[in-house]
Length: 437
Image (cartoon, rainbow, N blue to C red):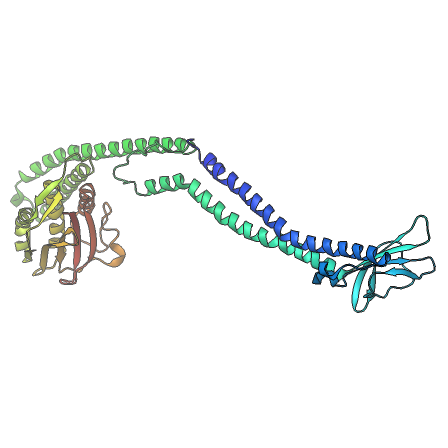
């Protein structure tokens, strides 16, 4: 039978367990209590048989007696109206001459006895039966022990088994939680409703609907950034073109300073629009199939494109490769990633500094590193540098704060792990990429 409900799964497993626990508990109590009750019953039976034998002038054959039959836990007395004992089954207890016609306690020989006296209907005789109180207490304690011990064991077994059954019954909920925890925020895929319990299907459907709305919202945001970047580039280009036709030499000093500020502001706005457009395109759906690429020519091209900026700042830019490397990546995306990282390293490296690009095969991965001899990035900021528009405190450069955010987005869609640390060799920042081989 297929169980499509969490409730049904738990009940189907739990009800047989409860029945089994009840059966085990009942059988255990029966067997543990049986011995005590049988022993007490046999002792009482022996006293009756002994009394009948003695009243007939006989005794019980010793071959039928056991050690527990010889104990003095019970006695039977027949007393006449004058208080004389006509029959006494044992002399373990010294009874007073007067007794109440009901149950009572009598202390004798260091023991407490529970004594019953019953009157005869046709004669004035009294029939007295006594049992030592310790025997009754022992029977009660043993019975309680026999009940409590199996109950405790069964209770412990029930608790552990119930926890296991509930955990197993709620496993679909745990699996759903793990699926949601591993969901990529950049590309929200639908959660499959197949083989889900009845209780989780509405939740899964609601989550899928929410994911669809989030994806629509993200697409609209990306399209807006793309359109806005396109729209901004045209008027900025026009403004800069108009500024460039102005004869700067004919302007006075104050006007020339304001003019230079205008040109600088237009350049920054143009750079920001270009970065916004690049960021929007990096976040778009990626449908290309990734193939293994020879990394050496890609890295050499990136080094060559940044060589001019390095020479202007007198920065030593090196490529260090110990072996031929190839990684599964999109060529254009890796070029954009390396351009951003190398350009960022050069900008934050002081004059006459060093920037090193290296690659090696490590534990089944291809590891690329970009290191610089700059001031590095403090530990408290290393988790924030990939956020959009984040700029280090005190930074005076003209960057838009989008380069590393774009780099991280490109890495995600190529399955590249990117991390930031401090370079042990150069002392500045060290960005590490892990590519599939």
